[in-house]
Every structure is written in C-alpha cells, then in structure tokens.
Image 1 (cartoon, rainbow, N blue to C red):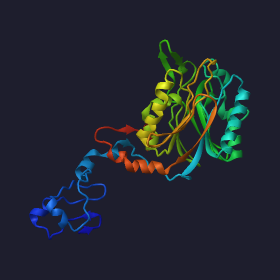
Image 2 (spheres, rainbow, N blue to C red):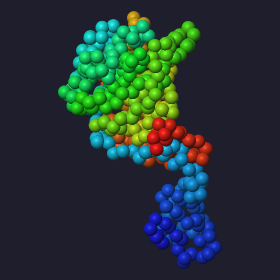
Image 3 (spheres, rainbow, N blue to C red):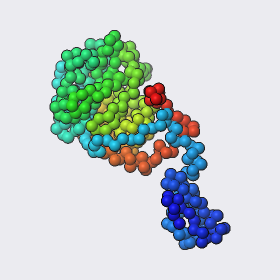
Image 4 (tube, one colour):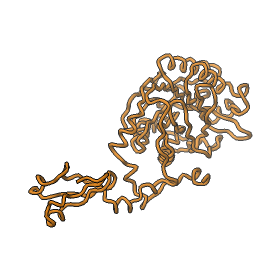
Length: 364
C-alpha cells in the first residue's frame, strides 16, 4: 500500500517474500528494488523494476548541498521566459566617435529585429592595444560628458526599452585603468559595472604575446545583475577561461552569462567555442559571447565568431569573422529541463569538494 510518499510491501506477502523487497522512500531517496520475477504479479502497487537511485544514507553522506559555500541560491523566476538576444559583432577603428555612432546603429538594428537584450564586443570604442587604452579611456563615474560611450548606451537603452550588456571599454578611475563592461536597463539606468577580473597576460612564442597588466588593473568583484531579461553574470574575454567564476555565477542563480571577448587567431580556433560550450554545459545555463569583427590589418586580429550556447552545450547561433548581428531566441525553460535531465546539483560530492564564494561568505 502507499502511505503519503512512502511505499510499503503488502502484509499479504509472506515474510520471506517481503524480505526480498526494500521499502521505497521519498522521491529523493529510494532504494534499489529487484524482486524475483515470480513475485511481480503479487505486488499491490505500480512497480518499475531496476530503477536505481541513491539511498538515504548515501545522499546524506555525499552532502551535495555543501558543495557550494554558502549553499547555491534557488534559480529565480525570470521576468520573461522567452526573448531574443542580439550579438553585435562590430568592426572597430581608431576613430572613437565613429565607433560610438556605428555601435548605436547596430544596437538599433538589433532592436528592430526583435532583440530585448543586446550585447556588444570587448573594447568596441578603441583599438585593442596597451598604447590605446590610456588614450581612449573614459571616467564612467564622472558622468556623460566624461564618458560619451556609456552615455550613448544609456540613451539608446532608454529610447528602445531594451537591456544592454555594453561590451567593454577602457575605464579610467583615479590613476588606474580597467577593462570595464557596463549593463544598462530599459530605463537607461546603469545596473552594473564589471571590471575584468582575469587580465589577459599570455606568451605563446612565435604566435602571440600580450600583457594587459602593463596598463590595466584587475577588477576585484564578480558581477551578477538582475535585469528585465533575467539574472545575468558578466565576464570579459579571459574571464571565460576560469570555470570557478562561472560556477560561482551559477550558484548565485544566473540564467545567462555574457562574455564580451576578443580571442585572437591563435587561441580562437582552438578554444573559443570549446570554452563557451564548457561553461554552459557544466553549469546548465546560457552563455552568450560577442567579439569584434576581424581586421587583418589591425595591430590585434580578433577571431570573431560571436555565439549563443544553450544549457545543454548546444550552439544555438553563431557567425563567422565579419561584421554581423546575430539574433537568437533564449528560452529559460530549457534550463529547468536540462537540470531535471541531469540533476547535477543533487549529485555533487560536498563531502569531497567545495566551491567557496568568498564575497557571499564574508557578507554573512
């Protein structure tokens, strides 16, 4: 018979027969049951043979809820379940004013095509070089006169009633420079500012050497922001290589991680799509990237290939290396479906490993 959520073997079975059956627990804690074929017709409840899940003692000893410290936040209900995202892969020149006008036109085109969220590339208002960063840097906190790039983003977001993840620009704050992404809501309000946490310092002999740390300062704060299109985690380019940051964003309840980025011609073909799909499938959420268009005559040649990846690691939309506006649908119901298909959060081994969110832990 069935009592509440527990199943019991009928007392009409002999003691020897009943001993061969296990009591089935709740939906999160069931035993393995393999009755003899001769007993199947005598079971007084619907029986699914060979269904295997963790027992109560196993689930308790694994401590999945302790694999994230503090425990993962519940995935919030987004304000909207389905919407279109626009990824604006832009050609960047040495003319800042032209770059701003061009970016605005691309945002307007993406909105006309139905995008409720628009993403721009990394360093879209300036050439990507250590020589250029100090020249093109803007003091975002000083207001629109000191930051024409973000002033445009705020104005167009309010005008078009869309959310904008504004790629990144060189930011000046005091005597320091940062690689900074600003997020604006549909009212044109600055909702978040992410300073690139992991600076791009690499040396591949004969291929590429670049050290952002020669001019830029690393950010110190992970960024998760609630918007009209859901909870979004922000990373910039090299941030995507560090899975811990994406895991932290997932534990904070992000539906989507946006990575404006400018991978190069050496690492781009090998790692760009691989990393996006890894971050998406490992954390069972959406990942969107937006790159500059390729300029083979520039000092830094970008790989391009702006992409949207779904929570099952599937590439939903992408482009090649030229200028493009990628429009694709995001459906957040897919997150719950994939997390039901593969319930990783309930299967983690908190008894063996933990991810500590230092910022959340220190604030409690």
